[in-house]
Amino acid sequence: MNASQVSQPPPIDPKRLSFPEDASLFTRLHVAVSILRVIKGNEGNPDYGQTLNKALDINVYTSLVPQIQRSEEGRRLLSERPSLESKNLDLEALARLPEGTLGHELARYFQNNKISPFETTLEIKTDIDFISKRYRETHDLLHVVTGYGTDEVGEVELQAYVLGNLGIRTAALIVLYGMIQHLKVPQPGVERSEYLRRLWAAYRRGSASPLFLDFWFEHHWETPVATLRTRLCAPAEGMN
Image 1 (cartoon, rainbow, N blue to C red):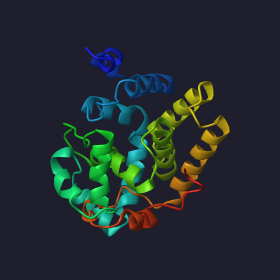
Image 2 (cartoon, helix red, strand yellow):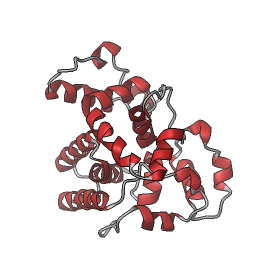
Image 3 (spheres, rainbow, N blue to C red):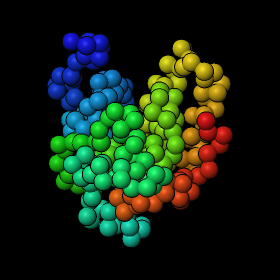
Image 4 (cartoon, one colour):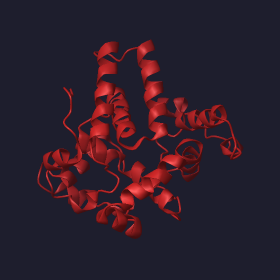
């Protein structure tokens, strides 16, 4: 057994994922925090994903549906429900695209970080199911397009960006947790004031950027990342 296996939290008892519709905010937050502690490396778990949605974000996703329906691309996205899961991505083919293109940079992102694309067994029955899945499977693409890193600071920056762009409450919880942890024990090379400034800048950038959930990333593998960044993201404020 290696060190990562020793430190890996045990799965959550399914009974702990249940709570009544009229559960208090405290109960919902308790369930959400319990899931966030074990979900890393198991993001595709349908029980965890659906419970997080129910606990914090079901109203957010419900409000996003009419926003996505406003554009022709968004309506087609909800109708066709394309997938960016691992089984739908040919990383070898994407890696052969020219450097700087979305496809090439995404393939290199997965290789450099030694991770695999999102995958889930969740059955998509509603637009809300689809939007929730689409949000999670575009996480890695957002790293590539926004330029936020995959270190602890970069991950929280991306969550701040998502909070500003979509209002996802799970992202708010992650940002809050990250802030508390960093204020207690700052990451090397990032002062507390700098950390807070970067999160605020990421939030403002997300708020000023167009909604990304109705964008067909799979139609732009050959488009330069720089072009997509200009199209999808507001300018970064002194991003490192």
